[in-house]
Image (tube, rainbow, N blue to C red; front, side, top):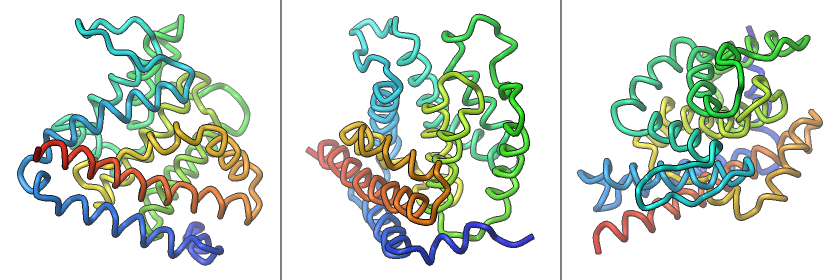
Length: 248
């Protein structure tokens, strides 16, 4: 089976953007605060990522002082954030590396448990022609591709946004799956980056780039991958600000 993602690396700007993303994330992992104190900075990154992802999905970003979140979108995003932090993240990574579709189902269960009326819908793809087949192809691609991790992360993210496989909280699942790729691949092993902040600040550009990916054209797909690589690079800068604060 040929590696369908390798040709994307040859699209204009993709290779350079992927290298910049990789180098930026590697640098923030070398930050003094992250040599031993990375669990603290990773926890803060998970919360920032969850709040930004919720906002992109139309949810609130407000976390009450008592921690009782009422907004169902934010509550789901925070549950996903907890699954992308600490020991829970390592467990999820192991599932992702073995059975990506099981990991996606788990993410949807966490993200949408307050959004769907029927619990049986949680973690189950929509019964729409083509959805199951495209998910299977995505899983095979994730397991088999040797393309650079930023490219794989962008494709997983874009495909899930375009496919909307569950019909609820799909954006939160897509962004979380992108984070899983960066961790599982070793690109961002401690999940320190916060690309979600970049995407939220550029919400219209994010939507436009995702639509370009969905068009399937070389320009659209390449533009989306470059955009996502830029988000990873910017997310490393956000991670640096967290680390700088931790060191006072």
